[in-house]
Length: 308
Image 1: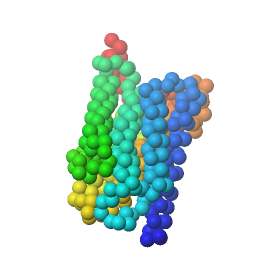
Image 2: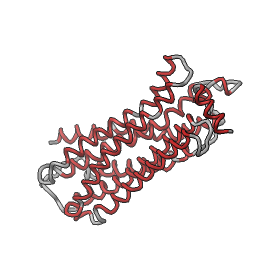
Image 3: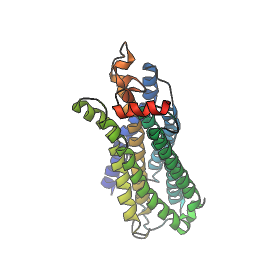
Image 4: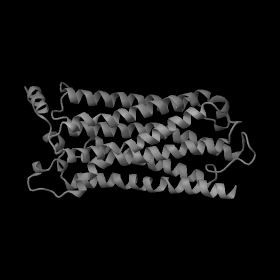
């Protein structure tokens, strides 16, 4: 049992910590990159600040739970323990799920806002691309707000009675995990047709596309949560240790949110590794309109039509 705990704690600390650190560092680097390239700060940048605060809050809850043995340790009594430790475990999980639902929505909106910044030439409601990205941001925002509120009211505020009152909360978690994965896949696929139309060499297209597709890692964590939540639906707290089940849920929450924030910053951070040209139009990566400047003729015709 001692070996099991050491192995589990090594995974809980060792796997999450590096990616958490990288995601925390990526946000200030994003702002530094914007300043270095003389690019204005917009919605996609500002949304990463509350997202960063949320990720840090989740990390505090996560590591506090491990340090206090509310997470990462088996229940020696088995079954449901209504003592102080299990109450703390439930409180940590309840708080983490609510914060996660809200912050996850902010990160997705930030990514969609970045897409609009890159691929929309004329920011006008009549522009088809602008309308498309704004609609997606509205849908994602509504989705995130709805599930955040649902999590708040699904289980009540008394952790000691969450098992009896939270059957609806588990159903909400199940459908949230599925919709979260679907939204991740859609967000990953959205830039592909736009990027493929760029007038770039094939190898360079794949390089740029690869930066955006790194978000697949976050989608993989989201898929794992779907599998875990589906499995969890078929068991009761008498079948397995509640604390370890909650630990697994919080672990994948931390993995997904860390990768998500990191992936949302990577396209912007690409500018750190390129020299600033004398003529900014020479490099698409150093301009807030850079990708658009290399877009196909259809995009240019769309711009002319909108300006008329």
